[in-house]
Image 1 (cartoon, rainbow, N blue to C red):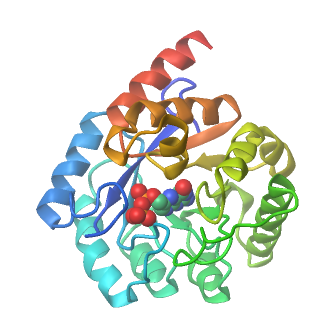
Image 2 (cartoon, protein in one colour):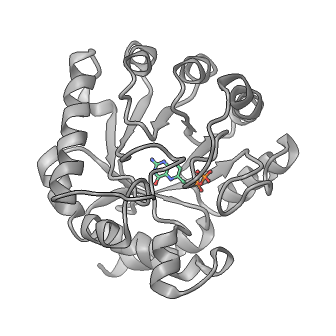
Length: 266
Ligand code: HH2
């Protein structure tokens, strides 16, 4: 899971949604989505993560049909772009369609908890990202509660990795993600960020971290979403320092530059 040299991989976010928390509507047509993808490729992205449903706190689910209408044309259009394509979905029917269309990775914020999701991906060869979320996007930030957030997130990810293996999925296909901001307070997010290595040591799977522009960065910097780029780059570097192999980001060029400097000197 390494990029050029020993650089960690940069996953660029391509939200084909009208309502994503930081870039809602910005890439919502096929034309806008493709031009953003082209820019990310020019900026050095390693993986493009295509999403058709906003799962920001308070969001309402969209139907699988609507999600497919948003995601599939972009996936088909980018199929030969030369970069691995990930599809960010929690719907088994969308997973199946995406895999049939050649998706290289399925990124499930529900961690393949739905047995139908595990069944949808088990016979494929694509990579899988198992993410932790407490609750549902609509209500997850109302009162996130843990006794020991690092242990509990680790327990969930370990159990999901076991379920994946029991479904016949090779470990080489898996990566894990603590799900920053998904049913977590600032203190929970900071504890997870500081202890990413603990999760990595326990699970022995590549770690993906998505901190880009999130509320956590806003709380720490006091900045609105459109001014969180520097804070997000810092968060990505901290995640890498603690073992993240993939960082999921909106600001690809800045993150790639920061990681080049970081890896040259680290
Ligand atoms: N964060 C978001 C969406 N998908 N997937 C993984 N694996 N890890 C994350 O941290 C993660 C994710 C939320 O960010 P974004 O896609 O920009 O927002 P929205 O859900 O509003 O579309």
